[in-house]
Every structure is written in structure tokens, then in C-alpha cells.
Amino acid sequence: MKIEQRMWTEAKGWQPNNPALESAQLVLAFGATPILRSQEQIQQIREAYPAAHVIGCSTAGEIQGIRVRDNSLAITSIQFEHTQIRGAQTQLGPTVDSFQAGKQLAQSFRPDGLVHVFVLSDGNLVNGSELVQGLVKHLPPNVALTGGLAGDGSRFEQTLVFLDTMPAEGRIAALGFYGNRLRVGYGSMGGWDPFGPDRLITRAEGNVLYELDGQSALGLYKKYLGEYAADLPASALLFPLQLRTPAGETGVVRTILSIDEQEGSMFFAGNVPEGTYARLMKANFERLVDGAMEAAQTNYRALNSSAPDLAILISCVGRKLVLGQMVEEEVEAVQEVLGKKTALTGFYSYGEIAPFTPSAACKLHNQTMTITTFSEV
Image (cartoon, rainbow, N blue to C red; front, side, top):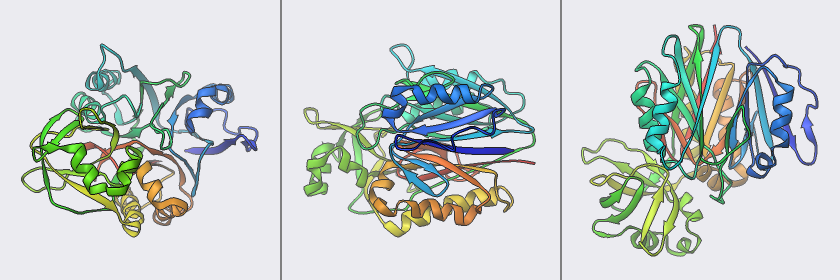
């Protein structure tokens, strides 16, 4: 596997200026929404790598190496020796909901030889839980799924996704990887601390939460947030909800994308089922960095403790806001585990898609660091 990484910024243009891996089969491109909206740089990528699938999305921050940037476009071109790639995409709309979109994408891939699927989705219009369910239900049981939801800084206005086309809203794109010499690792960890009592979700529809313990969910949430309530929905990134079942097993974390003051409801990136218990969470700086390291260690063990060629890091925008100027510490923690020979790329997202561990079911997560690694043998 050969890898080349380049970066575009308004101040410096492309660094390095000329591509050296023009025969690449795949280009991953993660960039700020305004840059993708202009489309000029995407066209330049397609011209520079004419044989490659070009897939990417808008972000809440771009990761390349151990650097985290804003308002840039980070690309990673890859030339595989023994792996084939197939791309598929669909568009959310009146006749295609999130579950149907997942089903369509899954059925686009022939099952023979399929070893992994990587998906990038619109981050504002999708129900990430339904998307994952549609994909998992219609993919072969031995094929793992990872990926994430596009971001738009902390604005939550417009997210863009593309695959061999120009970026667009409402789009979901996926790659299928084929070949028995490809080794894929994955892991997802959080690092948030719960506080306050458990609350029963007494009224919800899909990913819209109306009531906790029979009370207005938004009103109760605002009570806990105190002075932070004035900055909703952006401040909700600092106080996600952890969901668990009555049996007490560990559940997933959900982040609020928007609120409806009139209905007293909150709109989440994934489902918040009635009968589930929810608990507020807050950030723990050291545990966020430790969570990133644990996700890397899960990958490392899955690859028999050998350094991968490529790692795609998808971390939640809420983590970036909490870590602030120290955000690169969680990326450095990943490199410390995987080693400096592993090329790191990725982005800050509105949701992460992966199993917690190789033996777990795939789910939509919020507030995690999710890592997918690739190597050829």
C-alpha cells in the first residue's frame, strides 16, 4: 500500500503542490464546508487522480498527521496492491429515509469477497441510527461497518458529502473493500463522566425526545445546564446524554443537533427509544485523551499488534470543543499507540459509526473517538 498526503489552505494553496501518486485508486478528502461548497478544489483533486474514487465530506475540523486544522482541505491518496474498491451513494429525500438509504447502499455491494464497508453521511438530515440499521441488516454478517457523519463546525447549518461527484447536502456515500489480503481494525471509545440521576424516556419518536420522567425534556435539560442553556443547541455538545437499557448494560451516547422551543423537544443524531434510561454526561479532559488511546489500542490488538498503514480518525465535534487548544493531544495519543509509520487522516464529526470492539454490534455513537485502520499483507 502506497500513501500520499496533501493539504490545501487559502494562504498556501496545495502543499505539496504536485501529486506524486497519480495512479491511486482512492482519495479521502475532508474539508471545511465553505471550501467544499466552492467545488474548485474537488475538481482539482479529480483531475490530479483520474483513476481514483474520490470520497469525502465537510467537517468540524480536519485531521492529518498529528495536526488538527480548521478551514483546510486534507486529502490522502492510496494505491492498493491487492485490494479492489467499489463505491455507492444515495440521496435522502421524500421517498428515501435513513433506513432505506442504508438498505440501498448495502445492496449495491456484491457480497463475494467483501471484507469491509466505510460510510460517510450527511450530518444534519440523517437519522444515524436508522442508517446503521439499514446497512447492517442488509450487509453480510461477517462484513464490518465503520464511518461517520459529516460536520459543519459548530454551526449545524449545512453538511456535504461526495463520491466521484461534487459535494451535496442529503447525500450518503459508501466504499466497499474487496480482497483477502486486506486487514481492517476498528474501535470506538468515549471518556465522558455521567452525573445526576437516571431519567426514563417517557415520550419520544425516533430521534426526537419530548419527555423525561413525564416532564418536558427540554425544560429539564435546561435546568441542568443552567447558564449554558442560553447557548443551546451548541452548548449541548458539552453535555450529551448516555442511553442504557433497564438491564443496566452500557449504552450509547447521544448529542443534540437542534431544539424546538414550542414543542419542548430535542432532535438527536440517532434514536432515543421510549423506555430507555438517559443520564446527563460531562467532559473529563484526561479521560477523553485516554479514550482516544484505548480506541487505538483496540485497533492495534485487532491487527496482531502490528502497525497499520493507514488510520482514519473520526472524533466528535464535542470532544474538540472541550479539548480546545489541546485537541491535538488525542491525535498524538493515537500515534503513540500505532506508531509514526502509520498515516493518520480524518475529521471531527456529528456522529461516529463503528462497533465499540471487534466483537460488538455496529452502532451510531456521539462524543467518541472512532478509528478504522487498514493494512495489506
